[in-house]
Image 1 (cartoon, rainbow, N blue to C red):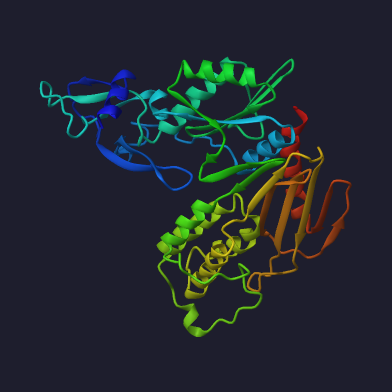
Image 2: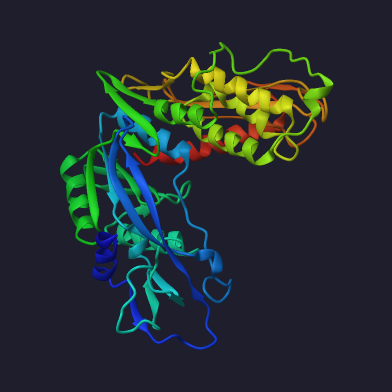
Length: 414
């Protein structure tokens, strides 16, 4: 706790002022967390001072709150590109990232519990910089970091605003930003180190070295590529669902399911949505469960026992496939391939079709999806192409064209 406060004081996060009359004062609290390593062991114990942002008044204490984070497809594409080009992959962590963002609004906060100034007990903290818990904190931090990168000559990608690229003679560097976690890669190790040193002079930056564990994703290196998996995340999810000792099953979905009248009984929607949300994040490295997860996502409103049973079947499948993941090979072509397919009125209730697609950079799969089409398809069409094949409605074709253009944006700048 003292270490956290020291960082706040050094960063000049606030100043003590008399409590202004008729002004909303945001509360504060301490949040404690255990940080784990990729193998599940304890890394460190962390205490963080957090503002009670739920007491902020819209239009008074904050305005815009939206903040960009890098898309999963962008992460996979850049990783596949780096592996194919034999680029170095490094990971950075920004300590107390939100404390670097500057506030435009006048925000007042109660003094931290247990550390109230005895000489000024009635004073409050006037925040000069953002603090964890404030609604505008992520946006303020991203604006601060992105401006620093733009000053260094980086350009923001049009396809993903959390991807920054630097192009100079014989130098190409990519930076991916997900809140305070940063991936940096490129074809020039010296240039990458210069960027890290420059950013380290502006922010409390920690160089974590070679990319190995990012957003719950484990990256393992082998002779001709990398392997992405979420084994630890899956194990934690099974423990959370109290299914760590369940019997594995070979498929995530039943081909034909018989539903009895008791299966229509409702279940706890909060528990159901929590499990589905966790499964959605697991699809980052598991395209094999994407269709099954999309199926259970369609019953958020009124989940039943049958829907919960479908989730447990996915978890049983994960129990037997903990070591599954994505393998990105260095020996791969430069071509972008996309494949799509759809069933015919697969949903018996709405008669709408299910569309699925996957996009490859050479031999490496970088994007995929499975979803129900928005309209009822009245015909099917086969559209052959050299790099793009689609079987289904016009909706599926346009979806793939959009993805192809986005991926091509990254590809052509190399």
